Length: 174
Image (cartoon, rainbow, N blue to C red):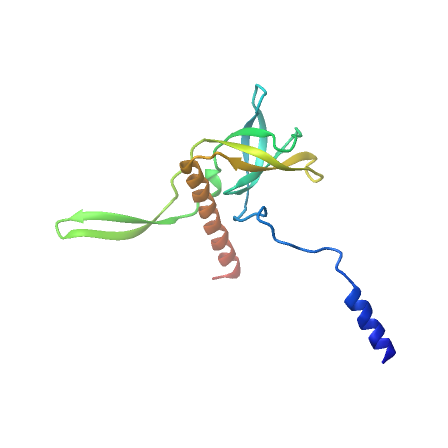
């Protein structure tokens, strides 16, 4: 009995080493694990440089390159979302036709509209060294993005999710 009481007292006094808390700053959107080339310009400096982007979300992306940036640095990014990665996906589109019998609608499966080059601005929110790649990686948060660009990024992510779901279903034999 004495052993049990001592053990339970020690267990009750034991505090976990790590506590997980959810903060408002944590990611609120889906992260698409795609990789594509980007051209960037660091604010206050002339000349563009090349890098890779991955882990795209509606709120930002990860930039992988040879250069380290200070926190809160502002960067202009130019890129085209990777059309080739979603070219095999079809999405439902509603077609409205007016015929002599009246107005009819039908749904057809079509490839997504191709994405064109976009320019966004971002701030560095996190920096780390990628051991696997031997490159600098920076978490970037989009800032001041216009509504049309936000919608295009969301559209790409939506199509990417459809692709992922269909691939998983195919792997399970559904």
